[in-house]
Image (cartoon, rainbow, N blue to C red; front, side, top):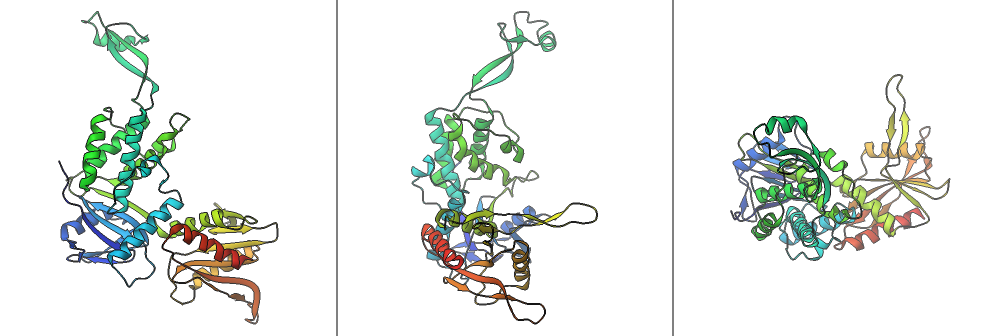
Length: 421
């Protein structure tokens, strides 16, 4: 069955979407809202909040697909413009950021042969996955040894006496045996096949429909496999199976984020969402690692024990990024995905930086925000006794967004190098 024309609504983080709102000719209706309400449940979800006849998005970006209808949530600093050009710009920036932090492999063989212009991040993930599976099929699916049990006309392997006697009391010419088989029916291929079947159900992009059908036609039929987080954690790839990695990465995202409606089958949900605070932190970190000053060691999430209760477990503090040059030149960075718009950081953020300064014996610390200009705002903590300026420096660094992700990374590294030196 050919899917209907894609029904996409594109919004930005922290936007509100009310029932009856129409975006680019697509209207958000009651049925759509009820699908999100069912997915939200009693416990809620981190990426959006339900309001009266509407939804308010949080600092998560990506796509939420409900019953074949897609809401794409994009990041944004300036909240004013909502043009198609702005949406295209931020979609490309989000794709570039996901690539930079290895959430999206755009160096894979699948992406190099990709001709589709995606309508959303979900389309891009699906298109790359299909190209990767096509690449694996053309190269030949990997075979592995496995144990199989069959009722055969010849004795092969070891005889399973209990089952043999139970099943072959009449058929004396048969043998119920366990033997070793070398074929494509193993976990890696079963995961890919399960993902293809999922895509056949949820895909709304007509240009991808024929590719999914063709791959399912040529892919060997596999037994269904129950998949959870541990399934992927137990996978160990070797020289022969390493080429499966890009496809498995996307399969993991799609299979683990799919929430079928088992009661009515009407409001199936796929939520492929990314926390912008985490994404921004990793983006700044990899930018410093790739383009920063090599004289500094760059460490992410360098935790230290901070508090010990009389009974129970200790608590740790964990700054986003720690730079070290020798033993007496430590710099701590904490990233925040929000636009200060010229205001001071919150007292909570400043108190956090004060602790980092003291506990890590840092030379200086800084809060790193996205913004509309490259700017280093100097600042210092005050002495508690007389409120005079202390030697504890805490800067507020604003990083302007660039249209090209690699240029943006270089600018981030250059600005922070200037401040550190």
